[in-house]
Length: 236
Image 1 (cartoon, rainbow, N blue to C red):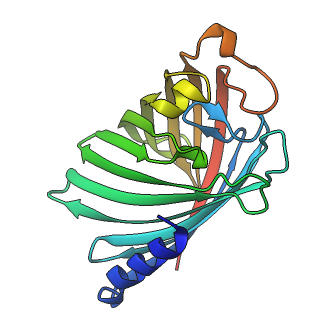
Image 2 (cartoon, helix red, strand yellow):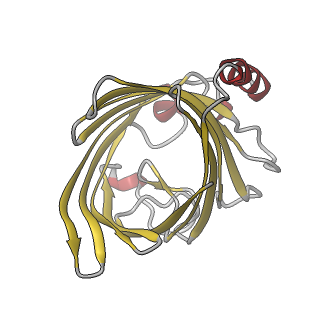
């Protein structure tokens, strides 16, 4: 499915739900753009931003961008997404999102679509991502993940909402078997908190990539690391 079709479908979905919308902008700086355990910025800092529209009906749409470094002429990634969230109670819900990954100016056509249903229940979020044509290679890719986020304290010193963040993910499918490093797991443990106008987080990331495919420098580095992130969201 091409980006133009996604935009057209989103426009039809949102046309009947434009009476109540909350726009917002989020700005982020992170010490490494890690995507499912693998660096997209060659281990360097990344500056990221998003513009989001959240409708009272449950629909949402947005665009997200980040600098990237694949060791070639790719400089930026822009993701276009839209979806719907069903809230069954204050703590249980289901989300279905379409995410279109694009790389403007890249000499290779790596654009692709991913379908991402997720279920959240209490402190847990369960996610499945399916790309029928991952990175425009013609091969499928799958990703399973579970996240646990538990508030440890409402306030402490100058921080608010101190939260324990645990993550486990598993990448598999034809793409990983034929084009890249094979099936692998990624996981992290971290802490996040609010600090004035910003949200801060620090996490330890690691994975189970086989030793002969490990790399600790340059493009697609996949070694263990500490990740520092600061972001702020501006509601309109």
